[in-house]
Structures are given as C-alpha cells and as structure tokens.
Length: 514
Image (cartoon, rainbow, N blue to C red; front, side, top):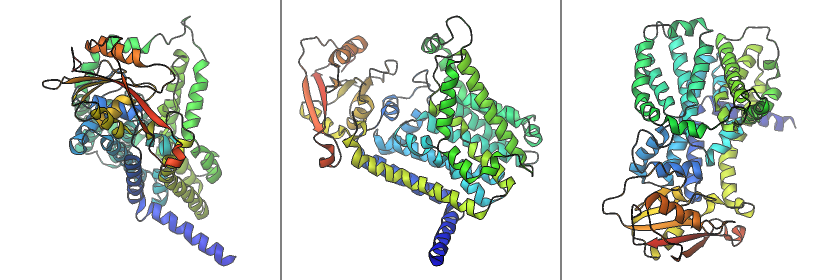
C-alpha cells in the first residue's frame, strides 16, 4: 500500500511539473488546442451559427458587417481563408489559435503576478475549469473568444508597464494596439477596459504609468486602429438604436428583474471553478494574516466594478438578459484566488491535487469532442454538427448547379455558412443577415434557394419570399422544388437512420440572384 501511495504521489508531482515547468503552459496548451482543432475540423462536417456567419461575412471586406459586433474576427477568418479556402478549417484555425494566444497571455501575465512559477502556471491554466471556456467555445462563439484573448493581452501589457521604469514607449504603443483591436473585437470590451483602468488607478505603480505623457502614444494608436469602424458605426446609429429596442422599464423606473439573470450568468461562467477553488484553497476566502500582493487588490476591485456595471445595466434594462458568455470579463478570477492562496501559504499536496483537476479538464475537452461525434446522434434533435454538407453540395451540383448565387434560409439549421464552405464557387447570402450582401461575381450565374425541408414548419415560403424581396429573384409560388437528402455523419449504427433533408429551387437567375 505504501508503494502504491508513493507511486501515486510521484505521478501527481510529475503531472504538476508537466503543467508548470516542462513543457509547461505553452507546450500543454498547444497540444490540447491542436487536438481540438483536428478533431473539430476532421470529424464534424457541420458548424453552428456563430462560426457559420463568419464564412458569410468574410466573402467581402468592409469596415463593418452588422451593428451587433465589430469586424475584426471576420477579417481574421478572411485572412486565413486565403490559405485554407473558405471552409471550416478557416474558422477553426482562427478560433483555436486565439484560445492558445489567450492562455499564453494569461501565462505571461501570471509570471508578473506570482512569486512561484508553479502557481503562475496553474493560474494561467485555470480557465480550463470554466465550463464555458473548456467546452462551449469549442463548438460555439466567435467574437467572445477573440475578446477574451485581448482581455488577457491588455492585462499582460499593463503588468509589463508596471514593472518598467519609467515605462517603455513601445509598451504604451502596444497597449494602444491591444485596446484598438479590443474595440474591433466586441463592444463589451469597453466595459472591461473602463473597469480595469479604474481598478488600476488604486495601485501606485500602475497609476504612475497611466498618468504619464506617454499615454498619448496609447491613445493615438488605439484611435488609429479603431476609428474607421466607429465612423462606419456612427452612420448606422439609427439601426443600432432600433436593435436595442425599448428595454427600459415601461414606467421609466428601476426593476430588479434582471439581477437574477446577471447573478446566474456570473455563477454559471465561474462554474465549476469556484467549487474547486473552495475545496482546494479555503484559506484564500478567509481573512489573510499576511498581506497579498498589491495586484490582488487591483484584480479584486476590477471584478467588483465589472459586476457593479452589470448589475446597474440589469436595473435600468431589465428585459436585456445577461447571457453566461458575457461573463468572460471574469476571466481573471483564478488570479485573485490563487494570489490570496499563495499569500496564505499553500501546501504541496494542494498544488498537486489542483493540478490533477486541471489536467483532467484539459484531457476531457478532446475526449469529449470525440465522444460527441460518436454518441451525439443518439440524442440530438437537429444534429447541426453532423449534417454532411459536402455530400449535399454534390447532390446540388448533380441537379445542374454550376455557380452563381445561393440564398439560404437560416432556421432551424445554420445553412448559409455551411453552404458557403461546401459551395466555395458560389456567392452565398444569408436571409438572417440582409445587410451583409456580398457583391455579385462577374457575369453572375444561376439562382439557388435552399432551406431545411425536414423542419417542423414549411420554410419554403420564407426562403422564396426572402429571395424575391431581397434580390428580386422572381420565383413564383408555382415553381417546383426538389428534395435532396443524406444520412448524418457518424457511426451508422449510432446515427440510426437519421437524415438531413434540404429543399432547393434552381433557376437560371434573375435580378440580383444570379
């Protein structure tokens, strides 16, 4: 028994060293991200709406595509598409590269914060204990992943500035670049930045760096990077106001209705990390006998400010529901916990136990993706990630489609982006995004209207009506349609005969649908 305990102890020690020393955070995270990229891109023939819409927008370059989100993520997909082609590899390479960069920035920031390199590594890897970071972003979300990467980058640059005397001009310019890119990633970035800078002013070292003439370089670079998009947005304030809607209480008063949504979103984002932290680092949540490093207070104030702004928003806009992934602004919560744990004194046993849970979470993501491919068809309804779009595209070509414009209805399956990947020779228009119309290709071609024909409701009227209204396609109600189908991707015995069915109308082309 003693020998078994010793071997187990050595295994835990070795695991801790792998995570924090060699290969450490860079080596571990690139291995996991590469595995997720390959599994996601090779096994699954379909993607969800967030990734799919990027393939639609990336058909043309613009200062903005929709007022809901800035354009930087689309630009990255467009750049990668020049190498991979307009396919699922493009969106997956961008996503997992950004996740890898996020962990690297967190690690570099942690090296400035922690006295122990071991705890710095564990703190940087801790977001893998957030369910939304470890799993949800693998199959969904786009702009949120980019924004999280830039959250980490801004923190790292601020810590670099804090450690420099008097602060290098290059770092001020780098901070401006990160801020400008953040403004092009997601509008919620400005809430993060305001909260972080306000919290930073409570620290004398950061305050000296931020109240400095060199900040002019930061402002200049940030403005140069972000200004073109915000000038584009300024011309569409009426659209932005229309989408915002009347979310203030009808009587003009304050409602507590949204506070519950915000609290559940914060707790949901931090899960299960906060439960694990309570078990592994109970001293971090008690009064400390030894002061924690000054940045602990800064991070604590930052989280208080972020939550206060969120609460204020829910009070005045109770009908605006705070969704869990908005809480990526709490990405630095593990730093606060582990800094306090380090100050309280942390045994080797607790470090090893926590490292074992981190490793389990890291391994669970790629294993879970493989299991999703094998077993999800047993329980999924629409099975969006298993729809064999390339097979369906071949069926479309067999009907005589040679190129032109594809008008795709987006519900209940995210057809537009997936068809863009499967029919790269075509111009694809999503009826969900009528303001993002790519220019017609030289000479035009045929007009193809597509919808999910196995949906509960008949989506033909919406698809044809959209093509007629948006592009003057001239398709009458009497025009016949064809059905094409294919079994879902996966193990045949598990798929159980499930098929995807599309309704299609192919015409020679008319109006702007050609």
